[in-house]
Amino acid sequence: MDTAIEIRDLTKTYGTRRGLTGLTLDVRAGEVFGYLGPNGAGKSTTIRLLLDLIRPTSGTATVLGLDPLRDGVALRRRVGYLAGDFVVDGRQKVRECLRFLGALRGGVAPARIEDLADQLGLDQNATIKSLSKGNRQKVGLVQAFMHTPELLILDEPSSGLDPLMQQTFLDLVTEAAAAGQTVFMSSHIMDEVEAVADRIAILRDGALVALDTVADLRASAVRRIEVSFGHRVRIEEFRGLPGITEPILDTTETTLRAQLTGTPDALIKAAARHTVTALHTTEPHLDEIFHAHYAAAPQPAA
Ligand SMILES: Nc1ncnc2c1ncn2[C@@H]1O[C@H](COP(=O)(O)OP(=O)(O)O)[C@@H](O)[C@H]1O
Ligand SMILES: [Mg+2]
Image (tube, rainbow, N blue to C red; front, side, top):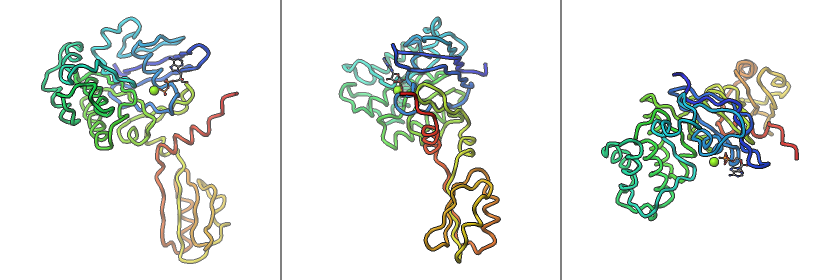
């Protein structure tokens, strides 16, 4: 099977509120798929539909070749799910809770649970209700990963984790991907997704606005370029060059700043007529791309 998740024209409305509109998307088996969007974009709605926690208004989804509406029980064994609002009974100790959840998944080796808890620095003797938000999130992560599911569906998995633990989480994702597991993870934070995802979808107001590989999203993005010269130059030389927009000179007329799309070849050749003392480009961060998509999309009618 090449497709882990197949979504076709999936729509969910909450009364008059739009949750998700006409989403069509394939997640390939074995890939790490980043599902990005600002709060309220429809990420959790999509994920809940995939797990049959809510029912679609129209459209279909297939998960591991199964219909979530009919094959929910079979699916739960093969999927590791971390809810955006992960909650468990607060009176139990972490160890009891994880063993119980492991039994529900058809049995998980205690050593596997120990190993994951150790990696995340989670004290299994603590009572759930005594845990901080970050430590509760770790319980959520352990239960999602512990049965080594074919597919991980993680809703904002690193929320509440400190930067060190975020990295540990990303290592878990990388390990899962290396073992052939598919990972579908939502986030409103670009950095973490950028580091591990093969492909990224950007969702806005319940609709898909971009879907591409991380590399291609970055290549199509605008980066900033700055060239410093050993003497004054004229701005006219740099206007209208392919790939260059908004060229400006600083007040000393020796440093050029511009926006660059695609190859810098034309700019480099124009600059090489002069003595170049420094050259800087900033790699676009995915969050800039993301904000560009966000800003470029037409505003919904009031
Ligand atoms: N149970 C619900 N009842 C009414 N509106 C909802 C409900 N759940 C989500 N929504 C609305 O659907 C939209 C998408 O929400 P959600 O999927 O939670 O977004 P995200 O997870 O991307 O932050 C939001 O406008 C939200 O207010
Ligand atoms: Mg959400």
